[in-house]
Amino acid sequence: MKQGLKVRVVIPVYNEETGIPALFERLRGVTASNTDVSFEFILVDDHSSDATPELMKRACADAPEYTYLRLSSNCGSHVAILAGLEHARGDCAAFLAADLQDPPELIPRLIESWREGNHVIWAVRAEREGIHWIERVFAETYYWLLRRVGMVKMPPRGSDFALLDRKVIDALLASVGANPSLGGDIARLGFRETHIPYVKKARMHGKSKWTIERKLRAFADAFVSFSYVPLRFMSYLGMACSVLGFLYAAFIIIMRLAAAQPIAGWASIMMAVLVLGGVQMTMLGVLGEYLWRTLEAARRRPRYFIEDSLHLDQDCPPQRTEQQAGNVGVGAPAPTRREDREAVN
Image 1 (cartoon, rainbow, N blue to C red):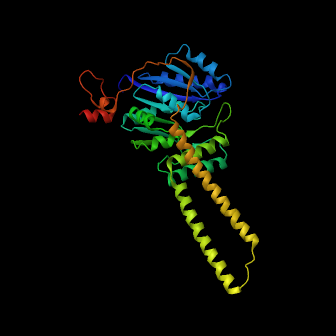
Image 2 (cartoon, rainbow, N blue to C red):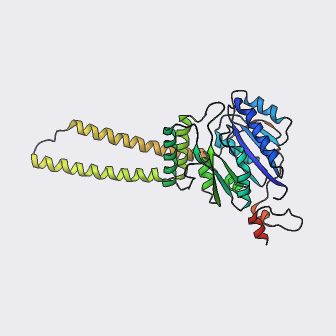
Image 3 (tube, rainbow, N blue to C red):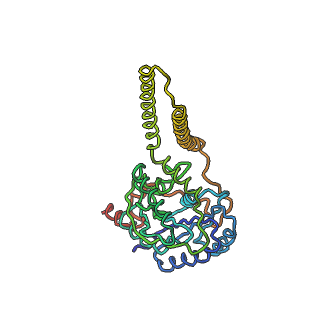
């Protein structure tokens, strides 16, 4: 391996006070066993309400390789990861959760795959420990639907743990919207990707923050952002209801002329009115989801604000562009990836 490789690791944290000591111990182990890589860990506190901020600032105070950010409000893990990536300087960056269900020890394998020329390396959950079978079924159904009706190709079982090349990070930050769905936003960029399977461990500290409300919000964000199927389905359903309505009207007229008496059926008429009313309200709700996200994007508001920080370099120069990175000349550092060495040769 070549010396001087800079890898940044972004870790969103929210109310994880019981697991902070174990997290830092595991991260120190990764650093100690990979001395040929320059690691920087960016810990993004998503406005925790427990002792997490104090514990992290205390642990980061005497360790310059640790950067601490605290967001001014709870914005969700995807926005927290983007905040960390915006302040990540280096050749590539990984992101993973702070609950240690995703093992930091897998990062060196992701780096090796990056050296082979891959731009996006997903750590894919081959198995999940400590999860109820109902939750597993719903999760797999969600990713199956997203792969079938969405315009992105996510890993079959999803991924919350990945390593991104510098050019992917720059493209992601330049294109992500106001309501990010990070996995889909990365997948739709189209860069070369690969998967590395691992076993997602059961949570050892604290409890999951992934509530039903957050799951429903993530479901809506993903499908509104990456699929037009709901809108197309609404069009087809509207046409089908119109055809059925005209057929039923023709049936009523024919029966009225043939029987020369009114057609009884107040209950059936009310049922049709209620069903059509429900369909229309559902359609309006779907349209509202799209319109709301369009309004949020049009406002161009910042996704987050930083309330507190430690070791944050506000004056860090911008990264090299893709064209500058490709111009390897005299005095430039030797390329560390197989892809870059082949390009030079």
